[in-house]
Length: 184
Image (spheres, rainbow, N blue to C red):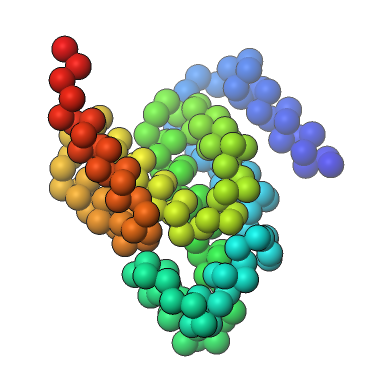
């Protein structure tokens, strides 16, 4: 409870009263708080409604066609780990991907964007780990394409996103349609 109160005071001081202007220190603190938030909310989950299905896929009782899930599962299974290691790896990737995306904006907004995303998606993230890794990489790839106009990095991230979950392909089809709309 004490940690919660200290964290709340910290958030109020840095975000509401703007004691510090957006600087590298603020960005570092914002990213650190975001990692802490994701860690506390998701990292130590040991069961959710899809756990049994993922565990069966991990033990090769059910085949999933997602290339990277199979690769990560093989990696951990061959080293004697249980499915929890795969889950924590996915949660770590989701955390890094959403914080990377959020940090593309104003320094002080990293924690706010990460928090809002986590609040609205907490249950889905803990259940649908394959999709949410893919989705967080997808939103970063869209940012890279539309804002940074970096097509090479977009192709790399888009490929990685699809390899994590083939279900993301319709969002890329929508993006292609969006890019062809004339808004003038």
